[in-house]
Image (cartoon, rainbow, N blue to C red; front, side, top):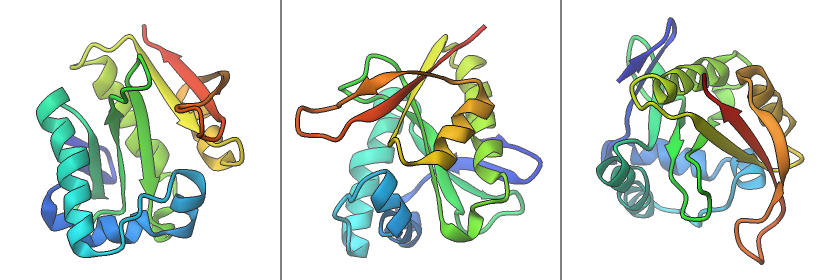
Length: 168
């Protein structure tokens, strides 16, 4: 569990399925990240089992819930993803509309970055983002990531901006 002045960052559970359903169906999430095809609570629970919960078991990290420090429902997700199509660990994040524009994504991502370079000892992280996602690209700039190239995760996928961060 990570803490910041305003946030608590902890593992997702199947109880977070209603939040995950809302996040995955947010129009901005679908536009800038992906349409995961999750339309029901049962599908959201399965998404959690197959994604974040499996990653915790397999990698010791994953996407975590970002909650108000005093507790409550998640405002978003932020964490680390080991994608089979990338050689480096990827930092990822997504927030519900009500939590945007308040610096929460930057605060959460900085805490995750500190955890990655500290306890996990990672020397390099990457991030992938759609070219049109200016807010995410700006956040990566603030975190010290640098644009590296355009990539496609699969031959049929759209081109994405690859950012990299080199730890000290």
